[in-house]
Amino acid sequence: MLEDKIRYFAYGSNLNKTQMKKRGVEIYDSELVKLPGWRLAFTYTSPSWGGGVLDIVPCDDGGLVEGVVYTIDEQGLKALDFYEGRETRNDIEVGVYRRQFIPVDRKQKWESVLTYVVNRTYEYRLNNHFPPSEKYMDTVIEGAKEHGLNDEYLRKLEKIETI
Image (cartoon, helix red, strand yellow):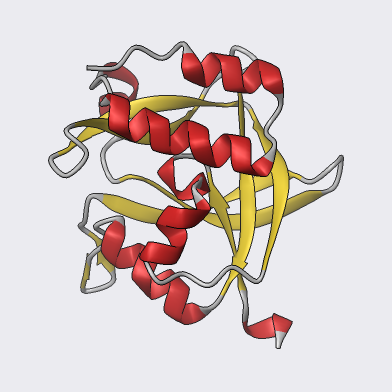
């Protein structure tokens, strides 16, 4: 039943279908989308990845993030909560990442979908940068290629300096 499904925007390592499968997330459908007015940022360092991991932050300079909207179920969302370090206490987001709804551009048609952003203040996220590991970026780029993100965007990802 599609009405029980969740629309989730992936922009980082969760673009990678193999990773999603390993995390126990069943993907019912996927669609390429754009997120204008936002940019990629590395605002959190992950011990398991050995470097920075992606976040998205709003920007005024014509930024654009490309990604995929997956249709997943509640069980998949719970798995993502675990892997993204999402925790709540008394309905307050206290984990590494928090859920957030954002509007994405589906070929000139807007849709509000769920994603994860680093659970820090906007100022912190603007002013902190933690370089990613090569392993992390390889996972992101592999996922971007699997979904056919455009060549210019792929080149941008490939130019990101790693540690």
